[in-house]
Image (cartoon, rainbow, N blue to C red; front, side):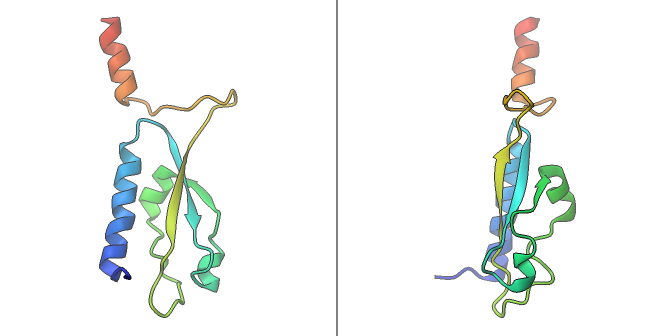
Length: 102
């Protein structure tokens, strides 16, 4: 069973909304290998989640796949130089920390 273009875009947007809800700072990378030659140029490029949300490059407008773009995003947590996960400012953890200090 294949997704319609609308279902595909809905899935991309759902994934972005879920990533945006994370309390951790995330980067996104393009998973585009095998879609078409134009999309293959994006494969593995990594951007901050904020940049992805601003640009919304997928579905890729230059895609040449006859049945439409099938590219997606992958996400991973950003770490500081010591290897610790970086939390978003104002995230749930910081709210709890403020509550416990008061």
